Each structure stands twice: as structure tokens, then as C-alpha cells.
Length: 329
Image (tube, rainbow, N blue to C red; front, side, top):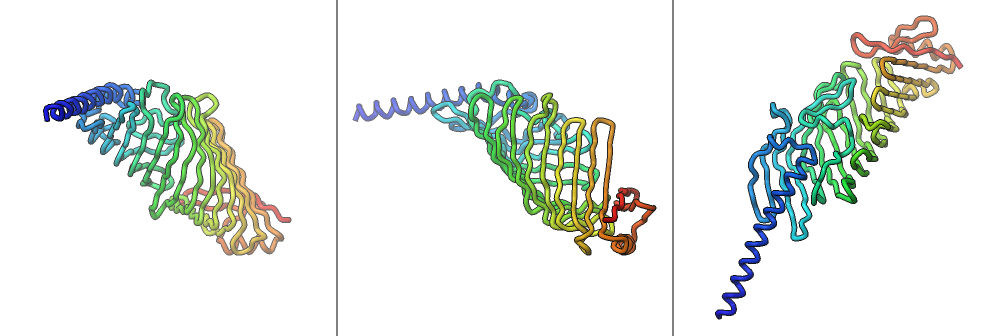
């Protein structure tokens, strides 16, 4: 009986010692990891301590608490590897001419992960995150985000995630795979179930799909996005189009868009549109090709469009218009 008591006492001591050592390891590593990920230590509340876990709740990401995290949990095992679970984050930002910005995450434009010490971190999981963005074209956009990032070598992580939106003005389902690391990265994206209604521009698109990739900009200042897009239907002003395809490229001080499609009422009528912005210089070029003059006249009349010589003016919203050159085959 005495031997059993001694064995139980030793085991209990080992368990208590293990708990103490794990907690100390986790506390020491948590400061290294969270600082390396860019968290402001002054915004972190005291954590709740559990067996091999530290849990932070209601974490503001900025001084005004515009963006915050519901729960951030760090977990460790006997090998000392640490996993992070971020649950119910709410991020707020905007999309403008300079790109994407999120309050509390000022380095989002750099695209890559920080080069800071991430200690024993092995995995980051983001669950049920909500992102709210203000845009000129779509007003407020609400998106949901789920991501898993598995550490490979150094500070390089394998990424698997999903971003989606189900609003009246914008809906899509975007899957993301790839790798991110300090100063490097490649994310592949697949877009499905897309729909948009840009009321200020009077543009609607349905059955939108596509693929693309994001890489760091050559000078590491921002990112470069390349995308191929398709849409089953597109309405712009009073005109209706089908079989839309195009490409989109965005990088610091550069934006390029190219689209082509066929008229819904007469597939022989085709359009192309190109937008090229580099620095302060912006060029737009559109062209509508008709099989004959009769088709051109009918198209202009049916769409109640304004034509001047060899140019058609396509109204977008109440104050905007895009001019297309007319070409008769």
C-alpha cells in the first residue's frame, strides 16, 4: 500500500511539474509568437490559463477597437509545439484607389508574413472571422473567412482557406491555397458562384467564376494580383451581354483590366474593353464590332444609346459614361 501511495505521489508530482513547465513554456513563447505576428502587446488582456493553453478574449487590434478578436487561444503539447486558434475576429477596413486596408493590421498591403521570431509556432487556424469593407462601387461588403496555416520550414506556412460573401449586391465563394513566408509567397485562388450588382455604375453580373494568383510585388512593396474571370451574363446600363471573359492585374501603381463578350440579342455583336492605369496615367479603350450597319443601328436604338459618328456612349450610373469605338465588319 505504501508503495502504491509513493507511486501515485510521484505521478501526481510529475503531472503538476509538467503542467507548470508547459504553462511557463507557453507564456514565454506566446510573447515571442504574438509579437512576431505583429500583435501590439499593450492591447492584450491577461490570459486565462488552462492545461497547456492560454486564452485571450476580446482583444482590440487598434486603439479605437474598430477591429477586434473574440478569442485567441494558444495550445501546446509535450513536444512544445504551439498552435493558435483565432475565433470570431471582426475586421473593418476599406478598398480604395490604394488597395485594401484593415484597421489594426497596417501591414496587410505587404502581403507576406513578418520575418520576426515565431518561436515554436506550428499552426494558425482562423475560424468564423468577419470582414467588413467600405467600397465606392458596392457600399459595405460583409465577408466570412476561415483559414488554416501549417508551418513548413522557417517562417513559411502552407495556406488553405475560404472567403465567401452572400449579400444582395455581392456574392462569391473563393477558395485559397498556397504558401506564405517572409518576403515571399504564392496564393492560388478559385472563384465560384459569383454575382455582383454595382448599383452606382448600373452594372450587374451573374454566374461569375475564375481563377487567379497573388504574389509579392517585385520590390516587396505590396502585392501583384493576376486573375482570369468569366461571367455567364452581364448588364451594363441598358445593354445585355453574354459569354464574358477577361483578365485583371493589380500591383502598386498599376491596374489593368481587359474584357470581351457578345451581345445577348445578337451574338454577332462583340465588345472589347481595356483599362490601363500606371501611376497617374490612365487609359481606356473600348470597341464594339457589328456585322453590318443595320445591326449597329438596331443596337443603338434598342439600348437607347447616344451615338456620335463612330462612337457609342454607354451610360454607367447617373453621371458616368464609357465611350466605345464602332467597327463595322
